Amino acid sequence: MLTVKEQYRNMREKIEECMFLIDYAKEAVQTSGLQPEIIAIRGGTDGARLSFMGLPCPNLGTGGYAFHGPFEHITTEGMDAVVENLKGIVKAFGEKAV
Image (cartoon, rainbow, N blue to C red; front, side, top):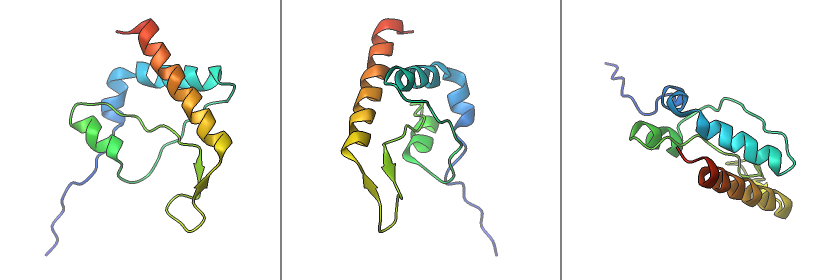
């Protein structure tokens, strides 16, 4: 007997309702001197779960590499870039709050 149990859903339907979140993140990344890379991710995430609980949470990059493996790491430069991106997102909310 097979039982199908929903665990994670595609958060796209929840994020599409508030695309300004993506716009703020893209703008923050560009302001920090980087080019945003927007890709679909696979698998369940906290952001997917929270999005369906009413708190839309698109996934943001952390600057890390080789996740969930023995070579997982992040550079100081990567962490600095993430801090700049987060500051840019907070600034966008302060300037453009809806």
